[in-house]
Image (cartoon, rainbow, N blue to C red):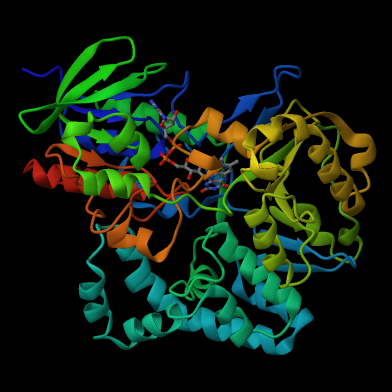
Length: 522
Ligand SMILES: Cc1cc2nc3c(=O)[nH]c(=O)nc-3n(C[C@H](O)[C@H](O)[C@H](O)COP(=O)(O)OP(=O)(O)OC[C@H]3O[C@@H](n4cnc5c(N)ncnc54)[C@H](O)[C@@H]3O)c2cc1C
């Protein structure tokens, strides 16, 4: 009898969600993770020099988490999760002291757009209206189930007016969509920034619908009370309640394949743990090249795993601050509501900056700074000692700085100082408010979470041949692999990275259906 029904490699949020569903269906599971805490990108750390100052070193903005099916089904609020969704969701601060604002209320967003261009405000409403049913009836359901082969999907979409509209708009690139539909360069820049949050190449045809979909989505950015790790702790509690076991600081050396099927793992400490099935939330390079003995991986699969592309534009550089006071923006003199802005974007005024940023990433050099971040303690004082604050800014910067990621270790602190300088131009009180700071480079991200290869926080590029049915590679979007009883459940699978939990959720449904078990819903 095997030690477990299922072993899950990696206890990030996708692995934990999958494990909780399997546990609810009565299966005995073990997840293993190399880190001392579970949660992967849902990480919150305390500043070792200043106790009580908490920093979210990876994911912070969680889009639509409370609307995800697993959030309710796994009863995460009973397990301690709590999310906040500030009304002034995103504010782009321009050099001349103005602000373009996205509110949870579309009327207030349109009002802000109108301040820049009446025509763009009307266009925003038109696209928002057109895409509400497309998001609700097509895109959201598609993200919550295994993807269809592209020809089948196209045929199904061609049958309805909304499906045809989606196909038509997605034929464009995000850049074409923005230039075709909107006129003001700051509005265009702000919209492309949204596209950038999903790390899609703004020049890639096939993704023109992304911006309209984000505008129409009822789901805005949310944050976890207590820090992002609070959501990880709730997921872990749900896993443990359903009988699941976790082993931390444990790494797999290989996935065991016996009689042509996945049969368990061997750890780097030499322990064999057997199971009826194995699920990997790691990337295809780790799963198919590092962990499976070569004879069990056909050449075509090895080549596909070796050829898996990571996002050029995803790597993030972070500057984290402990503060005596929250950043007070100059622009708040004309826009007092900015005192309660959630995500703040700085350094972005004109759409043309994007092509410059792409060029710098291709060359491995640092572009003029465009950064975004938040002051979490404005909304959740529990993340700093009483009367104090934390804040952070992120910037997309190349992984291979001047051709070599190792250059980051020498360049990190100087770049953090440059970011603080720009931030202080917009929020002059930062000159006296900083108690402590630290930076994290794209290389630090990869060191902490090696599945985020090349610092790619989405664990795989979104290109036409790595999305949907073809994520992680051609025809491999079913969560099953060429080895029976070996499955995938991480961000390298549909619908991809970020905190959505949907790769884990979808994989759980596939595994339960293969086992003939009823779906693990309450
Ligand atoms: C700086 C930064 C900021 C981000 N901001 C946001 C944000 O605001 N919003 C958002 O939605 N997303 C954000 N992300 C992205 C998000 O964190 C990831 O897309 C998400 O965590 C992926 O989830 P996952 O469960 O697939 O993988 P992970 O969260 O990476 O979990 C994988 C787990 O596998 C473990 N692991 C890796 N290799 C091994 C191994 N060899 N052996 C054992 N265990 C292993 C890791 O330790 C980890 O616990 C950010 C990421 C970074 C780096």
